[in-house]
Length: 281
Image 1 (cartoon, rainbow, N blue to C red):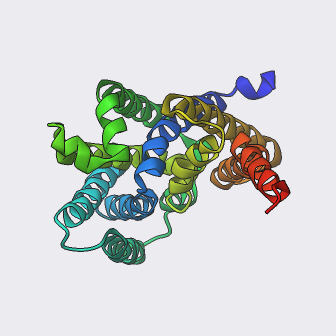
Image 2: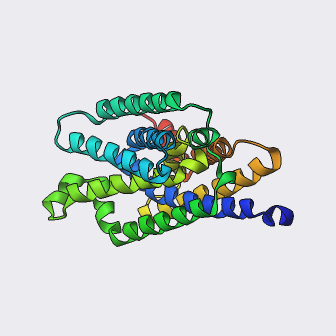
């Protein structure tokens, strides 16, 4: 273990996985409660299309991913809020459109570029000092914004119409939340890849939901699961030469299934069912 920590790339990978696990776990709670999982999937592929275009034209991959990701969530959010198109339809269109663009951009490249596929499948062990700095700055910005607007995000996650009626600018906050989701996906691309990043948004929060009855408790449990999965995934990928992204997501999924099997909610539900069966008619 100490030998592993002596390598600079492992130090960066562990720090990056901590930040990504933390941010994804926190924002993932709002994603799960608000039912925005499919928006996460569509945004991940949009951000990857931006990365592919950046490598094609020689631009900054992070900036292009941010542009594509934000554009997708804002358009999708606008169509949803105005009632012009159902969310599943618009997300399905953008999901396929951006993947088609990504494939087109990759096909236009004159030579094979392994860095592009690193963003598709995830390669956290290749995080550079500049990548880590960008992840750190964006993570701090996302977490600070959530802290400042926590009560408002809490409100709109359960009842946006009531929040609007109470004088809260719910629509603006909804777009702010979508923006935070997009930025979270962008900083996670290199760690788990575009294919799996939305799973890291959803799974820790969904697992935490099995244990918690209060939102703050749900966030804490989600953070513990997200960081544990991320760290363990990085270590196992180093020891056994495994793909880091898939290892992280598989461990998070294991936490989810264990949560479903042993959660207090499941035991209470089973107890109520058993008690009802014993009551004579």
